[in-house]
Length: 239
Ligand SMILES: NC(=O)c1ccc[n+]([C@@H]2O[C@H](COP(=O)([O-])OP(=O)(O)OC[C@H]3O[C@@H](n4cnc5c(N)ncnc54)[C@H](OP(=O)(O)O)[C@@H]3O)[C@@H](O)[C@H]2O)c1
Figure: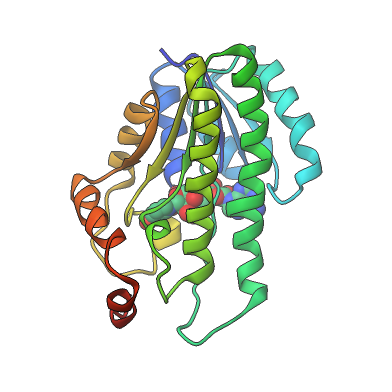
């Protein structure tokens, strides 16, 4: 039973839906994001179960104090999920630091600042599930989204290192690699997507299983092959 959880990036998409499903199952959930109105709307549906915190993950200096406050308010911590992420549309010939920087700040720096706090606590308590949402996009350097892809590859490697530190103490350190999922982030993309309710259910089920997990079994096979394409072949594909 997951008694207490923190979800950073819980105002929409997968973070929102994981928070909703956990609250429905009886977990006390702390939800964190900038859009407080969305968080409060969710909390209203589960009186006494959801605590709301308005926060921008790029305000890095707030994170240690806020983490301490939330764990105190919750009274414990079984699961921490970092779900915040941004992926602005980038043109094939666009090299814009203005668009790239938020991906570094939210997908990398914010993730490290939050996950370090959770990892330190779980290292000390020898208890918990530490989960981050990566992406199939982090498996190769694709031409369409250089910084988004690189930010997810960073997250995968960083989580592997944290796993190698603390999984031996009984902490589940989990990297989730979704493919296209029906959320605000991908609303503009016309492609087959996994319903967000299904993705969230799988994330919760996998949260106790240390390791890296694709949400679709097809992706597990496809990306094993794609990861091993030689670069000169990969360059010829317009992906
Ligand atoms: N959708 C997909 O197909 C897909 C596939 C693979 C991986 N992913 C990854 O899955 C994760 C969740 O994304 P999603 O698809 O559920 O998208 P989403 O609906 O756009 O949710 C993104 C979440 O990130 C939060 N966020 C963004 N900037 C933030 C900031 N500066 N401070 C605090 N929170 C911030 C948003 O909250 P506020 O705006 O309220 O702050 C929101 O709660 C992301 O890491 C994404 O890269 C998505």
